[in-house]
Amino acid sequence: MHPAARTRTTFRAGPTPVPQPRSRRIRSLIDADALRVLHRAARILLDDLPDLTDRLLAVLREQEPAYRTALENDHAATWQEVYRSLRHSVTSLLDPRGTREAAHRCTWRIGVTRAEQGLPLDALLHAFRLGGSLVWQRLVEETTRSEPEDTRLLVHVATDVWNFVDEHCTLVADAYRQAERQLAWRRENRVRLLAAALLDGTSRIADLPETAERLGLPEHGRYVVVAVAGGPPQDLPPGRNAYWHAGVEADHGIVLVGDEGTGEADRDPVAALALPTDRPAGRRIGVGSAVTGLAAVGDARRLADLALSICPPDGGTVRLTEHLPEALVVSCPELGATLTERVLGPLLRLEPADRDVLLDTLVAWFACEGSAQRAGERLYCHRNTVLNRLRRCEQLIGRSLSRPHDVVEISLALTARRLLRG
Image 1 (cartoon, rainbow, N blue to C red):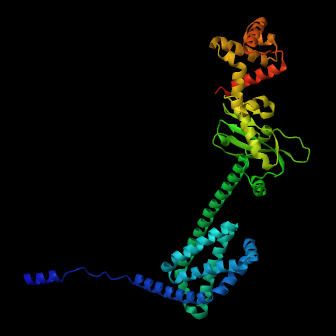
Image 2 (cartoon, rainbow, N blue to C red):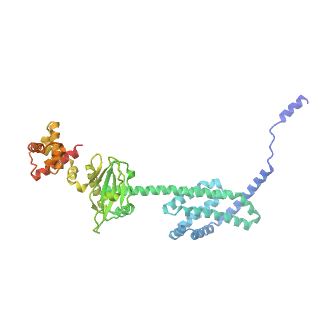
């Protein structure tokens, strides 16, 4: 071959167009025809949306009791909701990309609204699937009526139609569940706020009926508040007649112990709570005294906190009604400190070794109900040694252990020193 010819051949060379397979060209033509048939039927459905809405609502009324109730309560709003949803479904067949965002917003709003109204999610999803089924049925009916020979072409777009239905079922379920979680959080938060106001003593009288309903407790009952500190709060049982409120320094249980006006004796609140027997080491429980009505729970909480403050640091249960002298001291620390100094001051200013021996003797004597013999056994010394120490105490503080008034003062002063020393 001549070189020039070879050159010309080289210049003419280039990528050769790949012929499109016959099957693909046929498929493209079929898809285009199917879309043409789909769009023609969808435009007719747009003009027929009110009738389509009525048909769907009739089916829902028959098959879904929840929608039957919704229609009875607000027929107009339910009709408009179904109409808008169907309109977005049909227009999405004509312009999927252009209408996608608006259709999603509509479906999301429906999911949120129905969650807020308490319509069951199963009923909502059933309604969406029925709507999709009805739209498909009307597309087939209209095509069969106007162009029977084109009906077979709809098979090629059926997947797209049902993918749309599935997409919006998923979307409405997501919206419903998210709204449901938010509603649950708001309800729980409302309960916490109502309980906190109750325990703080700041509840409004107008809120008491709602508080009683949400806490599941009668408004007019006999209540004790139990304060618990130390140990994880999650092991505290819910209790049928109690409500637990978690706090920073202590958890509080509002415990129903009796019904007002029935003459029923108050139940033991600790027993009513069924607190676990294997309590964590260091757990302290303060039990206040009973009050009448939820409106007085704030007072009951303060009494429970008072009882809790008397609990030993290593744990235990203190019922306020069994420790009223201690409660009196702790309720006014300034007066307790003044009483301690006024009564025990001369003792407290002794050398530590001497001071501790005399104070321990006084404490033991009171603990043994005034028995020098038993106090001596507790202190590992003779009873006469106890008596000699007690006489020295009397001389130092200027009070007599044989005078009731002085005994009360000394006892309260010892209690105040023990409880307020920290």
